[in-house]
Image (cartoon, rainbow, N blue to C red; front, side, top):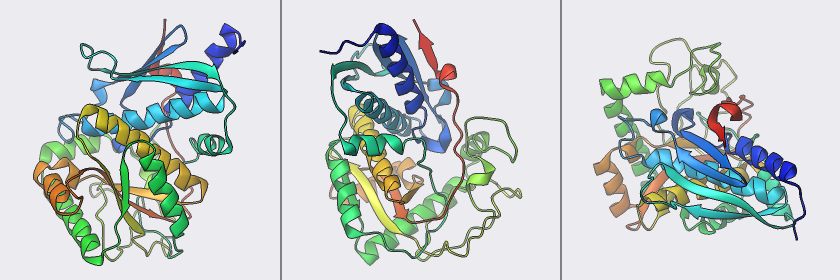
Length: 330
C-alpha cells in the first residue's frame, strides 16, 4: 500500500509536470497546459500555440502533447507510482487530451530510470551527423520502443526510398518557403540571438552555414536570410544519418497522441546511447505529399514523423517555459 502523504504526492505531481515541459514540440511551441486537481493531472492542448497555417487540423500539436504525456508517465513511474492514464476522456472537451493519476506504488526498473534521466538531456538536432555508424541493435531497440506504444518505427533501408524521402522533403520546403502566411508563422517562432524568450527555436540551435549531406534533407529556414545560427565547427556534419519514419495504422486524435508517446520513447532511448534526431515534417504538412508517402512508402500506414538519426557532438542548450507558466493548481 502507498502510504505517502498528500504533500509528497503533490511534490511528485509537480515534478511530473516539470518533466512534461521538456518534451519536444513543433518549432518548440510547447503547446500544452496542465491543471492539477487533487492527485489528478489534466493535460490540455493550448490552442493559442497552435500553428494555424502549418498545422490547421492540430496533428502536430497532438503529437507534441503526446510526447509531454509520455514524460508525465515516465516521471510518475520513476518516482514510485504506476500512472493511471485516460486518453481523450471527455468528447465534449476536445482540449482535454488526457488525465493522469499516480496509482499503486511500484519500483521503477532500470529501463524506466534510464529514460527518465534523459528527459532534460535530449536535444533536437538541425544539421548533418558524423560518419560514426548507428549500431543495428540500437535501431532494433528503438523499433521496439515504438511498438510498445502502438506505433511503428521503420528505418528506411532502400537507397531509392531514401532519395524519395529526401526529394519530397526538399520539394515541400521549397514550396513552403514561397508561402508568405506560412513563412510569417515560422518567423514568429524563430528566436533572435540573445532573446530571453523561453519558447521557439533559438538562433544558436542550428548552424549558420550548414553543410549539405547526400542525400540532402532540407531544414527549416528559421534565419530567413539573417546572420543567425551557431558558428560551431561543422566539419564533422557530413552524414545524413539513418532515415526513419514513424507511422500509425490509424490517423485519429488518439493515434496522434500515441505517435507522440512513441516518438518520445524513441528519442529518450536514443539519447541514452548518444544518438540524436533531426525532424522533417514539411511534407507531412501537405496533404497530397503525406498521402503519397502513405500509399507508396509507408505500407498504407499514416506517416507521423520523418526523422534522421545519428551521432553528433551537439551541445546546444534547451529552452523551456517554467512549469509555473503552464500549470494551474486548483
